[in-house]
Amino acid sequence: MEIKELPAREQNPTPASLAPRARAEVIFHRLAARYPDAKSGLHFRNPYELFVAAILSAQCTDERVNTVTPSLFSHYPTVQDLAAADPNELAAQIKPLGLYKTKTRNLLASARLVAERHGGKIPRDRESLLALPGVGRKVANVVLSNAFGLPALAVDRHVFRVAHRLGLAAAGTADGTEAELTALWPPDRWGQAHHLLIRHGREVCTARQPRCSQCPLADLCPAAYQRA
Image (cartoon, rainbow, N blue to C red; front, side, top):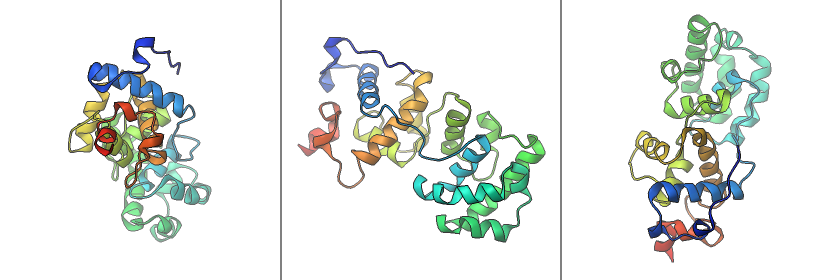
């Protein structure tokens, strides 16, 4: 995606000088310049692998998921293989990730429904994805955006935290935050905005000790002003 250069008057704006969408545009531009290689932290080769990895990532880091999925996908390379998996064997494969009993049930139930209703192919519409066990809006949006390139903005803990600190969102829920963020950027930027906010949340705007002195958005961030 091409990132256009901002007009000179918007290079160093103050928070009060910009309307919400213009401010969001500056934030997007700066983060894109800071993290030009921002992308999903989950390793996958196809929609099926991303679907499984996204379910496994609940309350778990992408890095930990990536340590388990190579072996998992060698044992269950297709939806049909996963649907036919022995529950105890599958549980043993994913046990290091935590919540393995619930994730085992959800993966098996979802795989069976995908095999039965969708011919073994991960559906590419939100309604069908949300009908699968273990799939909420975050997982559905991750799959839609990263597997199929469709407009979607998943809100995880990093996106939620950074968006609220920056004053891009005020809703108390992930769904409300998603609605606020998608109103600020055009649909073709939603997926990239998700990756940029996550990357910034992991590297700079961390949960406990945000590195405001290293932040390219400090002059635009209400939370940074409060810490000054």
